[in-house]
Length: 280
Picture 1 (cartoon, rainbow, N blue to C red):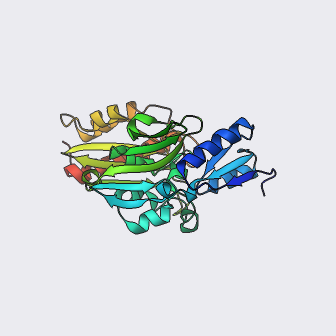
Picture 2 (cartoon, helix red, strand yellow; picture 1 turned 45 degrees about the vertical axis):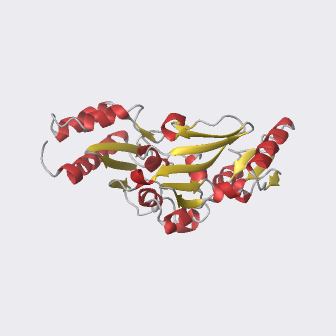
Picture 3 (tube, rainbow, N blue to C red; picture 1 turned 120 degrees about the horizontal axis):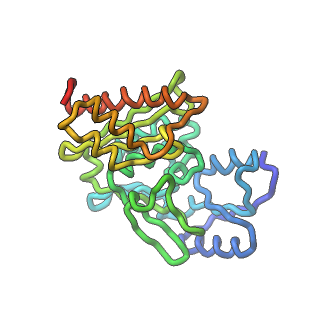
């Protein structure tokens, strides 16, 4: 049970949502945007999220789009993970979604909620980073469309009052070969030890990670190491590991040493899948 009272609003347009946020913020209510609500409810119960007002974006049509249009796949931030997977417009994203939480939770968790969550994993961002997707962001000044790789650094960099409206991905990127491997220590459900997402374009392998550090990320230096075919696969992987941009997690899911061991084997599987077994 949430121990404090808050006001609930469900605007029907982007403009109304932005104006509501500004007004509620001026009243000192510290409003937050709300789509699936799973994290707001969970963290609100333990007072890790405290707010005087929530603004539900599920009434905004632009946030509920789920379609292919002019060789682009457009997905609204308020679409549930279950619905996105059922429609199968973006198989790479669907693969990343399938093992997030359980089916009941995925019915409520939304794309925008997962990308902007406080939880460290946020696996849905991995395919978007690798396919050079665009994000549409709303603010009191209107809409802006930007490459996700420019505005996602450990988290989606939103200014106060801004919210994610949509993601846009070129169909040519959606059609590229991909892998998404999630490793758990013991169970088929629960938090992962590590997720590695990979995509290949013109024989160049791109990779992104979740659960390895305290945030999901894609790193071009790691990709350069993995694509250096003048070296053996083992050497490329060792060099890539040296380029991990933050400390490897060491927690109840697994020690840093164990994560690194699993990472080595997973990256070797990725390279073998696209280059064949054996050294380059």
